[in-house]
Image (cartoon, rainbow, N blue to C red; front, side, top):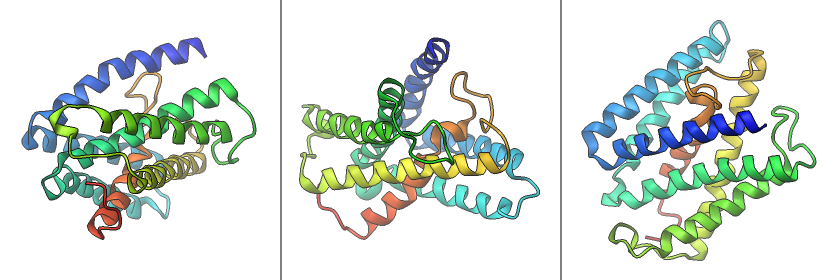
Length: 217
């Protein structure tokens, strides 16, 4: 576990600033970045699902997912929404990993044996804590947000979708008899292993925000 944790930590230290660089440095760089991510994700999907009946639908879903990511980047001129969705997904993954390793306990599903109920709860807890911190910052780019019941419900909903997305990709990996979708990220596996929750969270987030269900911005 120590070696795995060290690899994951070092990869995160390198990847997080790099990702934030592309996010904060304008739409052109961001579009290049997500296009590259779409290419890598599609290649990993090709390797794990070729000759399977869900091969083509998977590509359509990836295109839809990355397209909604593009649309959410500056949704209604509010870049904060995009940051909040990413923060929820990262916090969910982080909380699931930390709580799952520390508390262990009953397995959540046979599809993904590493998923536990403690990890699921940890994902919710860390998401809520980090969103609360994010909205409490005094920086200009988050000043338009206030913690509210609507934002809390949105956080729990997107955290749930992110966790379901993780399990769905685990299911397809299980069908393909593989542990990881790739090995591009040390300690994490493939890119799809890292963004499995996000590729489901972004389309659902876009639908929710487009329908104007929650009023928190």
